[in-house]
Image (cartoon, rainbow, N blue to C red; front, side):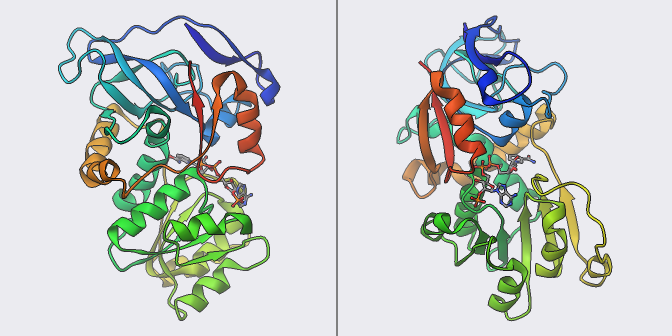
Length: 326
Ligand SMILES: NC(=O)c1ccc[n+]([C@@H]2O[C@H](COP(=O)([O-])OP(=O)(O)OC[C@H]3O[C@@H](n4cnc5c(N)ncnc54)[C@H](OP(=O)(O)O)[C@@H]3O)[C@@H](O)[C@H]2O)c1
């Protein structure tokens, strides 16, 4: 089969489309003829040699796919050849064929094409896991979402709206329109405004119940200031650095804050199976009727994967970047 690979760790120029062995499905796996895959920041890090795939997983980039079932493992009972599926992978999505466990594949609603379906798994499952499973966000609570126009951010905004939470976001000013359309109550241009001041102002000094963070060190102090009593922060990335000095941990103590980090890729199959099941129970009818939808910014043919990576690296996307695989 053909798959996108890189000559060596480095820039987007290292990417190429070449031959790779076609994966065989294990007993409980299905092989999918990939029609579309989507980009994630993890792909950029993997290409740079900073985020290796978990042991035993495909070395090919790509954490999510949509396509049709092409071959069944010998014990597969849930799927038949030709079914339209999408789902989360630990790797291997940038390829003509990918294998996925039958329990984490999701049926694509009739209303969605492959390009849209490929944009759901990683962003929405990440947002669901962070907000619903970890932070236990509830109706009426207040949420601060950083990088509000990112793939995960646009998914988190829609989930917040679904459960009736108030959402504030930080994002570049030109991305505020999208965030407001998706239900953000207020947007903060983090380049010119102090987000902690804004949150405390808009919540009359109370703060946000939940913060969804991707920045780490550069935002830590202001995230702690932004949180309400018993607030919860979920940290999913450290785009703003890993080492934080001079932080007043008294705030954590006095406000009884919880801070939890998480990564999705290396979770066990059991965890991903349960997560996928719970996610579908909450959301799948909403995807089918269009009240939830993946925000797709741009679709690139997979031959143009280097341009797609550069587009993400330049922080130009609002929502997901999809690769069509032909
Ligand atoms: N832990 C997990 O399980 C998990 C799973 C999936 C994703 N993630 C992480 O979640 C984050 C979002 O992923 P994604 O794929 O949705 O990303 P994305 O669509 O590429 O969006 C990322 C956005 O973050 C903003 N940003 C970048 N650098 C920034 C900085 N230094 N300060 C402030 N904002 C910055 C940019 O938007 P603006 O123009 O608004 O600045 C950028 O477009 C990534 O860091 C990713 O690694 C974690």
